[in-house]
Image (cartoon, rainbow, N blue to C red; front, side, top):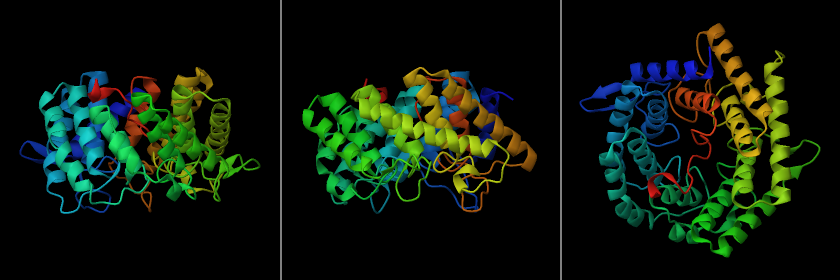
Length: 371
């Protein structure tokens, strides 16, 4: 089965499992509870995958289900008693996804609804500690605002990078912060943002272990805390602020991820959780997401071949066990973007059409809705 066929089968299954409520829909998680509306594991992220699938295939069913899922997000964001920060868990990130869905499927009303809520959400977030997280903090708000409006100076100026020096990785650490600041520099041209991004990369460099060819105490290769996410950040830096040491670090991250993927595909008993599940957050699809982007940015087709092998391995494993091993604590199937089937499907789309779908682990560029 090809990567595109796998993505389509997953899209059809996700549509089958949607719970409809009039003109909107949602899904249940692995424990039977209704999913939230966030990008990480909720309706916004699932809708984003289905909209990407619809844009590539012309699937009316994927487009209609994506629209129905996105339709309920703005109202639920507005009704939250406590605002949430971040690209993947936060309110602005959910609105960004709604706008992207509208753009991808040609639904201007969704784009307008997402934009209309921005002032109210920003006002409410003024009372919340920004932190530095990409997933649930200020760095994520920066990227969401860049995707929504093309500007995020106010959000970027709130971030205190000193609080990040002991945290590595994309999700909660220095890589995510650096990426957000580089995107601000790309749209403003203000040198201070580039300097702050380079300081964040430099601080993360201090955590590199050359013997393990990895960062941090655990030498993880995951998207969230390890080499897959760190490599994705370095590849974006290669595009926005080319520096020889950042390209070299991208190479180190890729070497680490290739080794982990090879161990997973060797048939030997896996020793780490990230080699035994297919989630984007802390599994093999996070590795494949990086490998596709490396093929696109660096022009090295061998990286794409490795990503294709990850997909083939995933399909074979899912067929053998009757389910996909997802990123839940038990490995049980779930539907969302970063732990489950939507993320697996989105990476399959990237493998099938490199460069057509943005990285799941770093989906916002200063493009889309701001154009």
